[in-house]
Length: 107
Image (cartoon, rainbow, N blue to C red):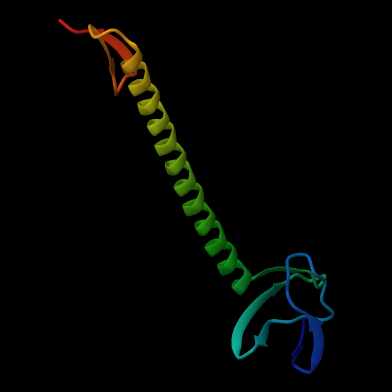
């Protein structure tokens, strides 16, 4: 994707993409975008990209937390089902403790 920078055509800023000349600000579809350029003309960061990366990492963190929670719930339900199956198979004087998944004597 190309856009015009003060009359000079240049590639869209990405980390490590080389530019010809020194660009301080660019305009992409009306949105201002600040670009940090080193003396060699290598674009290091771009504010829009930094915001997108932050949003992306936050979204990934939330997704990972949700998946971990659902996995924990599934494991708990599997343990409870196993516990109820064991309880049905045991004689009546023993029963399964749901929380610790251990057996206890009923007196």
